[in-house]
Length: 310
Image (cartoon, rainbow, N blue to C red):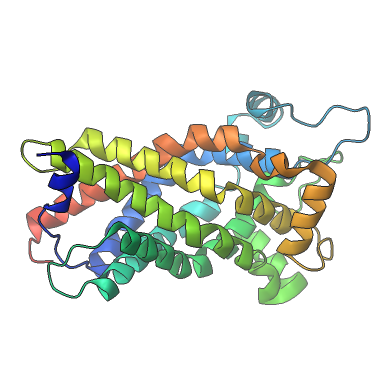
């Protein structure tokens, strides 16, 4: 039987459980951050570095130059700057994301064991972006500011940490300042999350169809998770660049939000700037998301063993 036929005739999965997905997603998110934050820092610094004057070299010539300068000037700890924000928020962010995915699946499943089509999986994945944006946007706003402070010519460091940054943002502009970049975050996550879950589920379905036992294994989980992470960033990178620039810019720089960022970027730097920082994020995407899904599948096995009816 062909792989496509095996996928089509595969047994349906149990109806999605948002509570279980909330818990396992949180654990997977922690695995993601611990394995990928240094390259995320490099990505953000490449995206937000100031435009060099005519005839002068840019602050960073590429991924490895950025990493070398960061370590030389700030030590290895510089690569982990701003990690407190995503690490504190990542459990609820990924928990909400995977719970949202489960809710999106559950809303489309007509029966207890109904199997979703890949277009329905994409819709469910996009739905997860709505759930996670409200937590992710302020967390990423703080993370970007912490990652980029001290990189300018004067080396000024305005914030001492995550809490200090949040307090100062609220004092300067209220909740609107804290949630700056929410629309750009949603612009990134709705389509990218859809593709993220679609790629993961498809690769796992192919792995199940080719397996003698019909079960997924560690190798397929690592590959599917890594590939899903890369697919996410291929689609979501342009919106992420716009988000990083908007969130790191002083108040009033971009009067019309993400539209002003897009116009300024295209006119001054060209379309390729929408993929600035793609090298470190692609290097990071595979291992970080492989670790995320490995953590999630590990947590699922834990629940299936100790609470099979959960």
